[in-house]
Image (tube, rainbow, N blue to C red; front, side, top):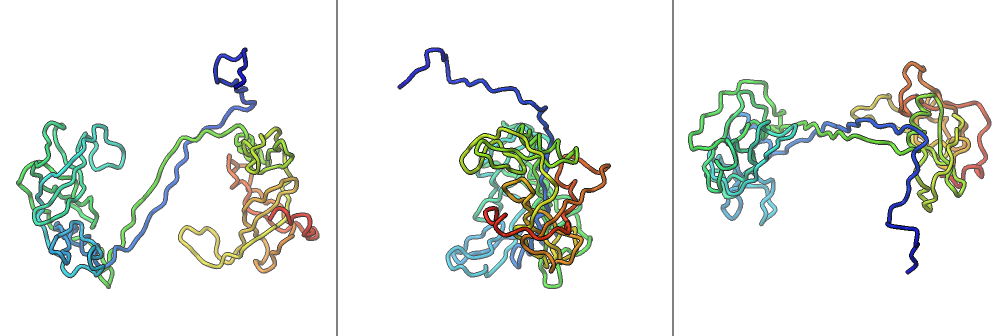
Length: 337
């Protein structure tokens, strides 16, 4: 082992970034929509009515929530049975600091509850003054919402004690389709605080200024967006490079299928565009021409949104459009497909 006498530890001096690092809150979200199918639809419809259903398996055991297929035979459950809204806590964990989206905004317990008439346990929230008030074996009852929609949170939570009040009558709109199936939508999302790398900051600041900034790595390749290091061999990025907003279509596809959230009416073209001076293409839209006219080697130019709309995103480039230049020779982009 070779030791550096001047070194006193593993620390390595990290140079201060040349640019002020950008930081922003980022939120990813989507609505997960699914059909519950014939078994869980009945469970949802019962919840909306203020009842709880389970399924009886071939071994006679009752599962809550009902299972869609018998574990032993693989067949759909032969019978759905109603169980009580009271039960026994079989195990639990105290949630001392509730977070957004949880059933209660005060400390509560997550518990497995075996409802009377069931042989399996249901996971739900139990309200209690504090953790010392709860114990394994405690008797609990469901607390229903006044307005129910066929979701598990139609039961707000369980509370200690045997006395269970019946759910208020429900007279809202039907939630099942003509075939008796229920479709539910569950919003899913996550927010993070993102700090850009220095190279990403170059890229984002460039977009805000109407420029396309890439990064050259030590082996000479230029990546757009720039990376901290080459994904090929780890060579560090050593230089920022301003690229032209013209390029060449390397590959493309014509989108003919509509989908939820689509912002452009099909058909349209999504293509990989190799910017002049870059060594890796980016995915973007090709518009202002018929989809069938787009081809490999087609020369294109960025179409920028009005400057008043610019922010730190590639959305500043609305799309690419044919530049009118002659097609690029295949040899000029064959190694960038």
